Image 1 (cartoon, rainbow, N blue to C red):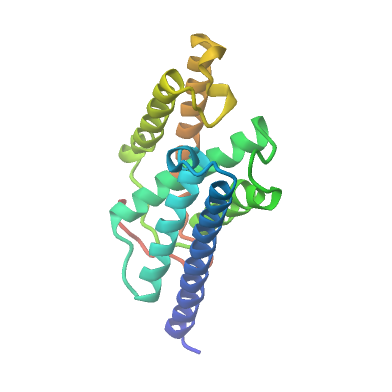
Image 2: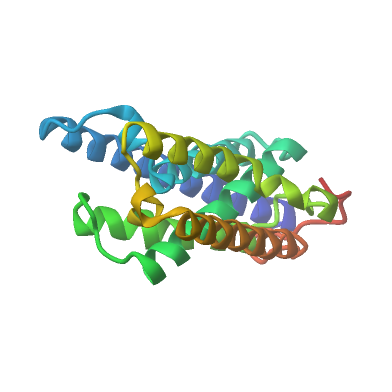
Length: 217
């Protein structure tokens, strides 16, 4: 087997794995949402207001798209690499904060919670580190990890102050302004730190697919 054919077989295997994993997570999110509808709690703004659900959905779509590009033998565009970097950083924060600060399954079955908070974040991060089909992310774009979670936080805080709904207890308005500010700052610092990890690991050439020299995205 030539090096080219061996690489192509690896690309196909990884591409299929990405698409299958992405489809499974999207299907899981859909089934969990149908369960909420069945018990009379099907407000989509509530279900997809959870940072966990949003981030898992976004990472699934981006990872699946990266898998399709591998199957089609097309390069990863810089915008997709940057978007994956941001989403992967957010998913790392989901895993760390959930398992470290707010363990439990909430309204979701235990196995669903395990997939969304442990298994898929681990798979997404390992894929990012080990598969070298993404360009290096330029440090000057590191700041881009913040806009999405800042907007999410703003929407959640407005909802908490108006209709009283928040996805996580530490964002309840009755905890007071100081508590809210502290938790928001901790969350944003965690996101910046996770972004630094993702940006740094984008310099790895990969193990499953090694990347050649490339200009940073």
